[in-house]
Image 1 (cartoon, rainbow, N blue to C red):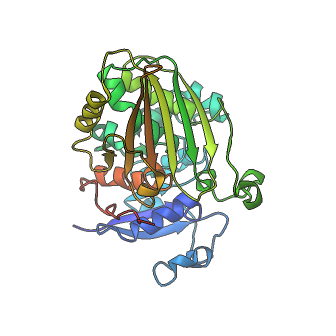
Image 2: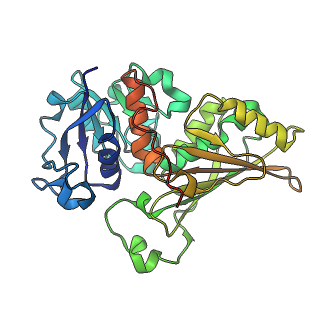
Image 3: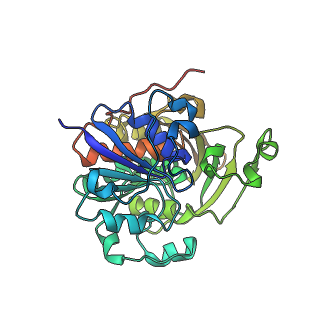
Length: 345
């Protein structure tokens, strides 16, 4: 098979750099172009020294990418990928790691991101693709919206419980914690080392932009409108997300029965691992991998199901999942290029 020619827009952001790292080991992919507004004309290995002797490409612009690439990964802030997708139309596939193609409703996007769709018609041709839920729609689509990191951990954590009808769709609480890379490469006071090290705090409680995406996916799974209380926190670690989800049980069911439901739901999903009974999911065990680890716990005092869902926010929450989507789109095994084992320490 001829290798898939890859372009990466925003290659010097954390998600873009992670795409480079992972795609260099993809047997069916070849990175042919990388771009960066901030570092245009420089060697990417000068920005990320870990790439020396491995990838020493000059960071160019995006103008020629649609004509020389089979797929473009857009690792850009919200509002910038839509125009690029229009340039790619009829030429190549675009996989957007930003928010431009995540929300179905333009009004919701405007409310949470303060921007309008420039081409509403283009959005009717796109697909929001969390692979374990929407792979069939992805197989023939040329505009793919890659899910956010928090929404990925929550959707995978909640899917079996919602589909089984054993939990209420009212009063769901999502308590998530993310590593600092989730805030992006640009430095802010809140991610400055003295403020982050040995610190732990909530942020954007009840007002995080991932809220409508989480609700959209959970509503789709449940077949009814779902609203959540979502509170993210910043962990003083580089990478990883742990989402603890609380949902009230509405069926008389044991933890062992719930565990069986989850194991059956994910028995054919390589990247989702259900922890054994009485074990806890841990971000350490998914680090640098495309895995999502899920553990289940039951508070019998309040009849509440407690779900712990862990991913690496840079891999399953961003670059790895984008490559998984590329694999689906180009009819490759989903695990291709994504079988690295998480380090033990």
